[in-house]
Figure 1 (tube, one colour):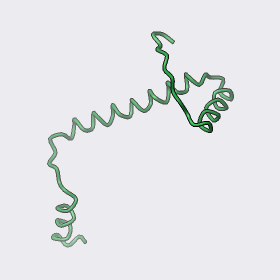
Figure 2 (cartoon, rainbow, N blue to C red; figure 1 turned 60 degrees about the horizontal axis):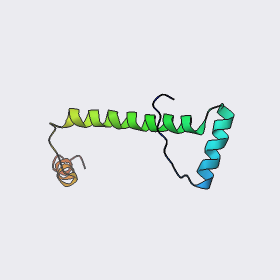
Figure 3 (cartoon, one colour; figure 1 turned 45 degrees about the vertical axis):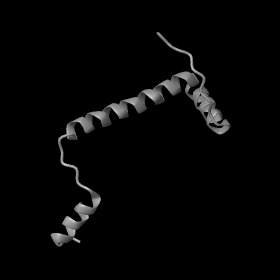
Figure 4 (cartoon, rainbow, N blue to C red; figure 1 turned 120 degrees about the vertical axis):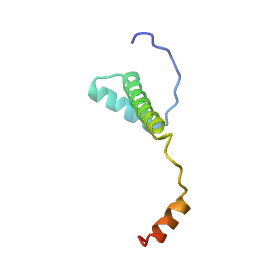
Length: 76
């Protein structure tokens, strides 16, 4: 791993065992698996942030006013 940094992460015993078993079965290191999982989570965050930026100009509507609008229009 290029430019890797060391960190101490504590897992519950069951999670750690599952990680070790999965790593052995897939011929990968626990570190590689954790890096991939964190990378995937960060990618999802980036997608969410992009969506938030796109929708920033949208008008905010409270749940109460939305439901009242449905009722007013005879939809509920």
